[in-house]
Image (cartoon, rainbow, N blue to C red):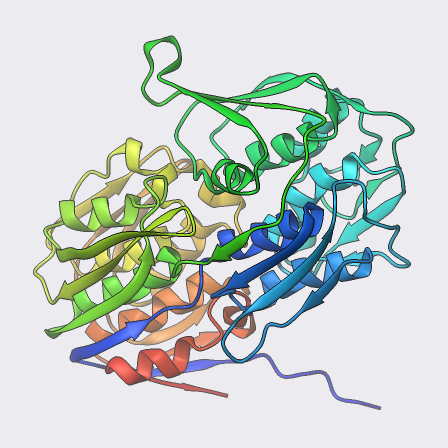
Length: 449
């Protein structure tokens, strides 16, 4: 009888200074979409800088299971996708395994809703608790034959459509790039023009990549005089044309090292080739507002996305009231930002972030539990948290299988008075396969077992 695999544990020792000139892995959002759009395009798409994390590989394997020929990733993180057009996918022989990737299952729902064949998707224990009604309900409005469990969680079943989907005009209940993207992708298979209105700014990688692949998309900003409100429209019936994609460094991954550089007692880190998409720079805005010494240099464009290098120096951070405008622009980076808040003078307050409760874990509660374990004062609210900076002690942290929780507490070791044990770190590989080696390279002390 085989033994169950032992969960991965990180153990950290206190650190002090940091230094280094590093490159973080490719952007996860862009990597996912490059596989999806490349598969649905006519022709061959070449991708450079692809993130070979488990989430993006799950997306790749799903398209392979639907008949798409994909080469790579090679040692230089290059991938070649031989697209078959919008209607070139074939029925998978088995249920599609999404692993831990919420992006994969939500965006694929939009694509699979428009197919003639039936399919089913599910993932690991964590993913199968994630809410899917937010994409299933608008897709059903588009006449998609799609369903999830009675409680709105995976598996998701797409039963095939005999005709085209129907275009809808949809107002997102909350700002969500995944839901927006799902509806826009389904809109390619719909009769008429599908419009999504978002109440707040979300990442726009889908709109940018539609344009890069030659699919017309209309973006209208400042709707009804509200600078936060944007309307995106897409007409069904056009085609995607293969192109070359350069994936920028993932700003979510870079944020761990931005925070590391800021909270260290001394030192400087330069992070190269970081994606600076304006819908993703909330973490930079917040950390600068906390008086973090961050300098943006060498700004340029790569593959339709703005990129730059970031120089980070040790800083005396100050607690702030985080602007709600920055919340959707930093939604994935808050676990790391919470560590910065724990090291700042005074109290940092976050509101309007209820979306954090339905990520890979309830990130507000999970981070609060961990910070309290380490001696940091926190008060949790339905849509946010107050964190009062103080001395980080030692303790045992439950990451709840959430890669960002695990990496955030690993970074906190730079200001800890003792060792920190972080449980269930296997999913770090989903987004940042070389996190431990890169962290140790710049001056942290993390062992894994």
